[in-house]
Amino acid sequence: MINKVYRLVAPRQIVASFEERTLHGNGIIVRPTKLSICAADQRYYTGTRGKDALKKKLPMALIHEGVGKVVYDPKGEFNHGDKVVMIPNTPIQKDEIISENYLSTSKFRSSGYDGFMQDYIFMARDRIVKYNSIDDNIASFIELLSVAIHSINRFELKSHERRDTIGVWGDGNVGFITSLILKKRYPKSNVIVFGKNEEKLSFFSFVDETYQIDEIPSKLSVDHAFEAVGGKSSEFAIKQIIKHINPEGSISILGVSENPIEIETRMVLEKGLNIIGSSRSSRFDFVEAVRFLEEYKDYQNQLQKLIYEVIRVKNIKDICKAFEQDLTTTFKTVIEWNV
Ligand SMILES: NC(=O)C1=CN([C@@H]2O[C@H](COP(=O)(O)OP(=O)(O)OC[C@H]3O[C@@H](n4cnc5c(N)ncnc54)[C@H](OP(=O)(O)O)[C@@H]3O)[C@@H](O)[C@H]2O)C=CC1
Ligand SMILES: O=C(CO)[C@H](O)[C@H](O)COP(=O)(O)O
Ligand SMILES: [Zn+2]
Image (cartoon, rainbow, N blue to C red):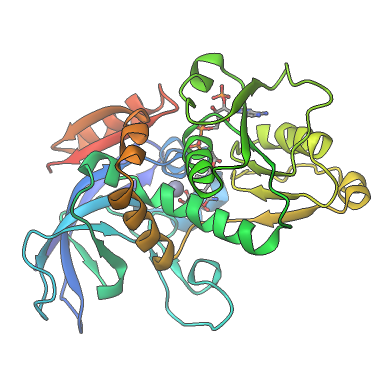
């Protein structure tokens, strides 16, 4: 069949291409319905990802957060119209120890490989997860939940067990979702969020405390910390974490920085800290994210707060409008994919 793919060819320039596609093996065809814009997509759209990366990765269709409906399953395991979350990572090999999202051979959509801005997505059978009782707008950014779940699972495996106080630096989407899941996973822990903006911090009603980063009491300490800031600002956040973390604590880093940032290794050594990097997620994390949302409906009420706008997109002009609108908010923009 002929598929239409909407690719970014240069910053702020999207072009539609027609491609002949055939379904191979046990693949499945999905029609995207709701997509969500990630900070990483914006770095490509605006060109801040850097010239070398753009040269290497463009042209490509953006978006790696999204849901859709099954339109064709040759095996008949899925029904026409089944609602599914699409997994952007496509592993090529299996490894007994290394998770699929850390294998260098894996292909990640909207990072060098076409993302979900297409008429139809041709996916391997294990790259979709069915859902029923989740609001579609919220489901559109389940990938972000899977990322937070993945980092918390790694934290659980690699950190010591004193988790009386856990700090989360970053009052944006990733900070919100990470602290929400942390609070559910460790209800007895004191979860504290550190951010820059009082208004954004007021959204975090489910955590125990919030602080603006220039008003942190000097004696305040945390057993472990999550960094969910990204960019150059993550340097300042990590510096502050190192200052306030107790010896032998773990720092889970989630924020993506385009350029290398400085970390005060002397204090990392002196305090015996554990730094855990976490990137993307695996099918296992998506399944867990769907299960969590279907089980705990109160999660959905909280996540609703993150949606700034739902924008109906019918053509390339609308796509650009959605990306431009999204730049005006740190919260989530959901695209209703009607092209
Ligand atoms: N590891 C992974 O797999 C993933 C990583 N990410 C990355 O995570 C990062 C965060 O994403 P997202 O939440 O969507 O982005 P946001 O911009 O929504 O969140 C970052 C927040 O941190 C605040 N902030 C800035 N400086 C500090 C500081 N020193 N201490 C505490 N908070 C600070 C910002 O405030 P203000 O806006 O006022 O500056 C903003 O509210 C990005 O780099 C993104 O690319 C995203 C998805 C997956
Ligand atoms: O958003 C993400 C995952 O959800 C990551 O930030 C993204 O994968 C980073 O990719 P890139 O190297 O293309 O910036
Ligand atoms: Zn992302």
